Image (cartoon, rainbow, N blue to C red; front, side, top):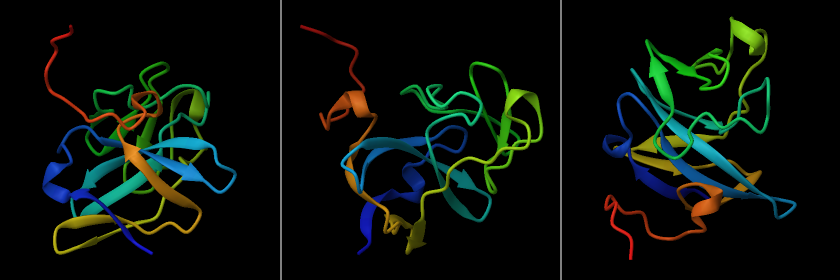
Length: 135
């Protein structure tokens, strides 16, 4: 079953859209959506060199010329294929999550995971806000 995630227009052109999925074992995993010239791709939100290193730390993944950049070591992953040709993660590929686009909407279609909430794991499903106020 496909789950609506967001509109393609809501994914930053230079950055990512972060959401959390639940895996079959009940564990949570973050996923990033990135825009491509002809669609979108979705990748689990960790560098292959160090799996505890998030590519999107909650403010969008750093990107340059179609590459997702690891903020710790600078390895660059092709946004379309997930493959890395440089740095400490060279020769590795990001873990893909299946999504599809229909009528400008992005759907999670991966049978291995289910949608948990928008944002990162630590966000716990709380509504996102652009406000920086705290009380």
